[in-house]
Length: 163
Image 1 (tube, rainbow, N blue to C red):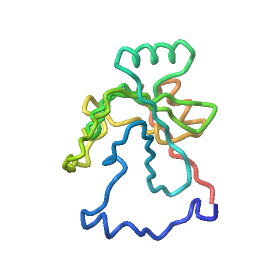
Image 2: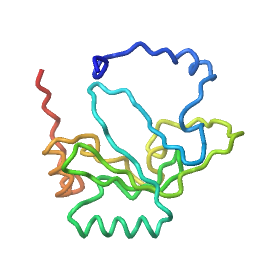
Image 3: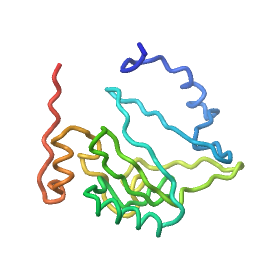
């Protein structure tokens, strides 16, 4: 695991820059699971996702989450890029979120890639970007989220980085 947290030379760049690469989202096989890896200045796992049957199932799930003292870190939202409806449940025992979603866009084999603008509508066509706490897993961020402090206008203090 010597590569965790270190910069690696990317071998695929040329292919993607020339439009010849295939992305995980371009592959559709029955019963296929997907995982996306994103570069980060520090190693961590942000979220995993589960596909639910329909919005009624998702609504019942979110009701159950709230009844058991948990909350949505962000959502419900409608992602512009994938067109899915989702919410992100904070898991306080582990540093991660669980995305629960329905209606993910299914791509046909002859799908033509689209260009998406780098704006808030790509992340959420229904409203705001996620709160700052969504990107953090420290106790202060969890407290701000649990107590809705960002929604009440309090700014989440910057994360102290010890070098």
